[in-house]
Image (cartoon, rainbow, N blue to C red; front, side, top):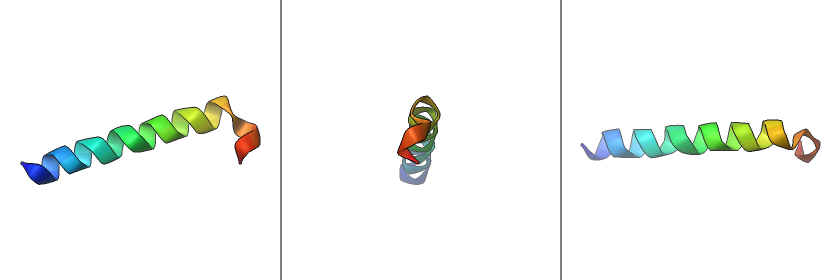
Length: 28
């Protein structure tokens, strides 16, 4: 159960980072 929660949080964090990166390509 803990592993599922950690996996979900990591997935959301990665998606949020990718979205932020696409919105601000100059940050790369």
